[in-house]
Image 1 (tube, helix red, strand yellow):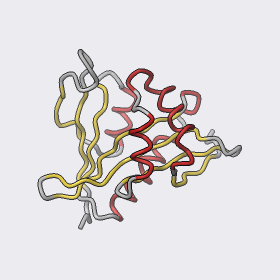
Image 2 (spheres, rainbow, N blue to C red; image 1 turned 180 degrees about the vertical axis):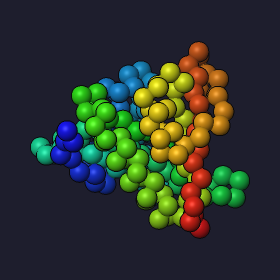
Image 3 (tube, rainbow, N blue to C red; image 1 turned 45 degrees about the horizontal axis):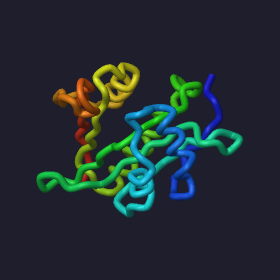
Image 4 (cartoon, rainbow, N blue to C red; image 1 turned 45 degrees about the vertical axis):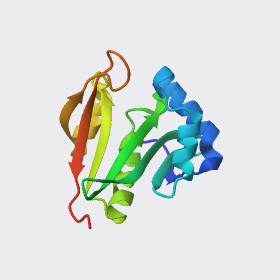
Length: 157
């Protein structure tokens, strides 16, 4: 059964709730408060939240438009969904909307990193058309490797 939630833009007023969600999902590997605040305030960032029928944030996704080798790239920094809401399409909805926003802003491709042992996220990213192009040693700290993923966007400017 699909649960009721909506995707909306997140802003700095959501900082504490998103930070708690980041800690719940990533523990000691979560982004710190100041970096999340930077992303929420940065005009080149796109920050989204999934909000349940009671107004609580149950997921979020934050990315940023960057230039890389002459291309406009949408870098996905974080996607998180409360554990009790996983497997219900929340992450897919956040990523789909984030991709739409990046596409609208003229991005030519999307890039992200994902822990090599995060199989549910890897399956989600691959189902959305991301290709894992390389393994990055110690990306998340000593002994914690990541895959770098990318997705080319048709219609990017």
